[in-house]
Image (cartoon, rainbow over all chains, first blue to last red; front, side):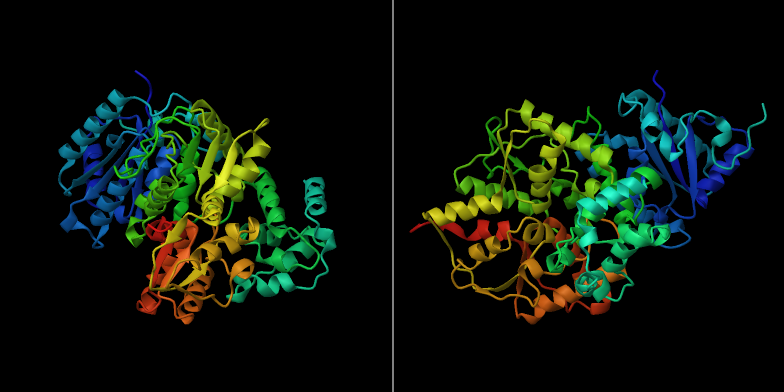
Length: 162
Length: 386
């Protein structure tokens, strides 16, 4: 199977609490994706999601709070709208809309989060890379590393004890 | 690097600068209170080149609207100078300049450089539009389908321009080919210094046209026309496509006779896009066509034709408070003509001015209907005596 590049964009509150709890419980998580933590998914706009695809991501997952749980108010709603529009742009560009996934979680749903991640990884691996072309060479000058399977690079997460 | 700058200065006639300062006096950035001076940039790049920070900033901040060259008594090609400096700086120091909309527009343009791209860009074609699947003549849609989605939030209908252009072509008995794999013309990449990806787009587009057996490409957007007719031949050796601006085509047909216009009882004014009026020198065309519409009262803004003020932004970089100020001033000028319909000819003018109309602080008193020239003409044109 071809290596795919995956990016998770994670809200600092509920989803990151789940992610943290899952890590503390040493649940097995997919290691071929990178996680970016933001204070609120409302911070992410269309351009930033599109940029991930421009830089060679094969799948992007937005992990966000439930609509009513947002600490700031409209965060997840902004997320829905952005995902909607970026999906349409991806469709225009001939990229499968399913490569952009949006999931919301309550703060205690660590199992759901982990299984959502596994589903996401499985789905994108089945779809394969967006292009045959190696994006890494093209963007090497931007300082974006090629090797995304290196687990120590994922977020601020310490390496798991074996 | 110094040698390259020297040759740019030579090629763009910067040594002929008299330091009269007319360029600074008309620069829309300066008029809205920004500390920006084309004259000072020319001075620094010639004699004070060590002030790199200043030069770099000033090069990226220009709107490239070319109104300075319009007023320059010694023919300094300022926009050309900016273009080449941006290419040089992008090569040596990296792409800079604040990208509006976080660079999403440039993102999808770069994504289009992938050779195996399979776009779904023709979903908007409705049944009433007659298009051919094969033929000599293509219509270049450009970024309209992308803008339509991206700018849905400000309710601007850029696809209407494409639909109405095809309706006009149908009226002239032309059934254009719409190419499913055409890419962006690359205007914004060129003007933000990304030469490499710009050239890649030119090569891909040219190959797509050739593979589809196209001989003539009709373009409605002035930016696309400028790129396809002036810059693409420089990239492609043996370029042999005929590029036609839809405005020219309609003007020619109207002059031949056989067409007339339905009356439109509106008071209109025209926003000249910088590429159309100054760079392509076609400010007379839209006026010629608009004034033929019966019952329409056409009023000029204070700054019009080759002297028109920019819509505040170009190539989607450097949108800031000063850009907004330019747009607000422009809309106030349009309002003061008493017009209730603002006509323009470039989708970007339409996007930028629509955005400014929605300024909350102005409480909607800048609102006026804005339409593309092609839409107005497509609604009014009819056969002579028909």
